[in-house]
Length: 397
Image: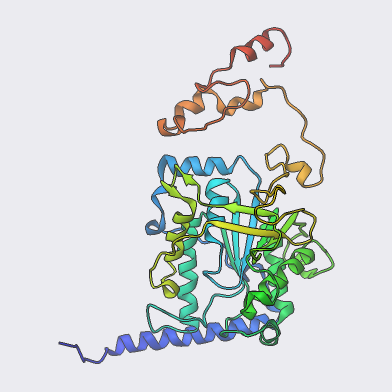
């Protein structure tokens, strides 16, 4: 039998209160976008800390510790820019974070609040809240370190980029993007979209078009100087910018293949990412998208030479090819002098000594592909070569 009883007064008041708050929040966001004085760093959402139920098994215990330790071994970082939640290249992000160990961030221009809802009646602001949380859950699978949004509002399907910029304050959206770049400070920025009419949706076209503009503006202290003088941010020069949306017969510079197997995930990076993408149920209705796993990108300013698929021209398999993303290479990436060289038996390696090893877990000690600093063996003891050099006076105590 269908229960036809009316909801109680408390439930009705609660629903009304939620509706009023959502309406006021939407109005406040629209007003803030047109009010330069109201802008502050907290207008973008940093990736929130997970609650207990959101923690994945692969991020717990020894596996989670090893994943975090591997991230400490590289300075690689990238920012992926899209227009809506579920636009992202999930496999690429997962491989970059969980495979390469790079620090990864995602910037969505809006929260998709004017899209369809496959799981309920919520629309507009309420749907924006749902899609925001869905993207957070997906990001747990991708291994995202940061998640950001601008203050642009999704008003529905846009037929052209001109229509999008008539509805959005272009300068305000650009300022938000610059703020995120200066705040996150990535080495590489990867646009999901090409920045041309081929992107179809006006919001997609706008995201691809604004990405290289934001990268250039972030490095210029004369652009949006209040971010520097009042918000404490600094100009940031991105080393490389790439864009997706490359067609089959066009040259490209980077091919990211996410179909490889991860021993930590127990699955391929692409299939693992597809599980996360399937959590955006308001758009997927809970279906897991199969296939994919190969992503092609073009260097925006054309300084990287690529070739068509199937040609003999060498194609990079990473955005960081040719960059020294080790800790020692960081000064060179920042345009500073190299770090002073230290001997192989330097006391700086004492963090890997036997006491540290005794405190570590047995699972971490047996982790595959573990690499030890030169002069140390897997048990935490100095190697014979290192001890010999010390006896001969080649190293200092």
